[in-house]
Length: 505
Image (cartoon, rainbow, N blue to C red):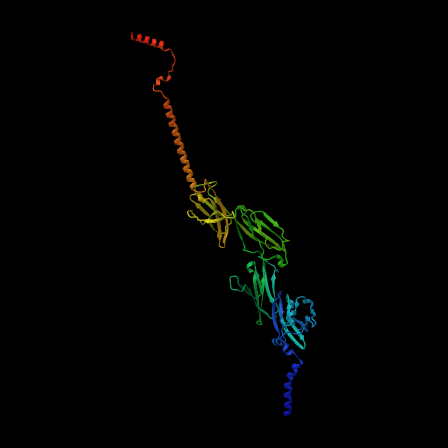
């Protein structure tokens, strides 16, 4: 009895030792089944590595290694078929249906990494995969179940701005679906949103650029399995605000923006045409840009705008068989003076800054710009104080009494919540304005002195003429008409005597 017990003891003691040497590597090389979930269209890595102990024992595996990946398919009863085989000579064989989407990293094989890469993953790739690795006398095996999550967009990519969008999410899991949740930008913030439903389909009536970005669908099944997939939703629309407004001064140039969010060729599509139209006027421009696939910007340049150019413009871009459009508003700034024609000193002047198509949030500010010469012979505009004027903020600038210091350029700036929006300048010229006040005073003094001198000289001339005339006048005015005649002296004397005697008689 004791001999029988001894024999049984030896049998059970040696059995594990014998089994370990008969099947080398299988007990330790076999790995338990793993499960990998990936989204359709992305890349998948089915892991298969040597155990840490095996990796430590052999820092570098031999050159002759054979790797065989098989797929059992979605059904357990389906016969396995070869996916990828790498012989010990390095020759590779790939299944026709999965070529060239499957591969192994040759550099990783010598490090004990035999993972299978599938790029991109298709929904039919779901199933159970098995790997067998042989080197020397060792055999290593891996079992990986690949599950595929499918996210479907209707209409398909690219998603066009403002078109109805349907997003659905399902997977290859066989249990009953209980709930589907959608998470948009899961980080806390005003743009994060969550939608849950039983159908698994999410509808967005008018998708906008704010709907673009990271989305995650989460599937919850009756067997407590929770599966999720993340994808980036790309919407082909326009960059910038929904209804942009461009502010331009009358007489200046304006550029109206029209820039797509993505290059159409990124979706395998080409731009057929893009044209601008003025909604309050007629057809403006039509550009064929089918060959310009390297740009996504199609601005409209207006060399000189006026009040008649203000209003809404529409940029329409045809992508494939669909057309997307955006409205752009052009607001024109003008300055009107209360005095038509030349402005004289001392007058009351009003400068009114007008804005077409105001949005209601604009603020106005007036600034007097002085031209300061620089070494480069350019003019640098510097603001000057508006003290003494009726207003410095608001659309109307009042100057109670115009003076020479008001001459120059006045700027009306328009501001909004986002900062300065635009500006318009007005050149104010004062009639009779001088460079400074000192020459004006000196000129008045010279004029007054010249007048006094002229009056003095005239008075002196009058006095001189009067004195000269007085010097020529005789003492006896009665003799002024007499004239002298030469006669003999004696006869004249005798006649005089005769007259005298006769008188006496």
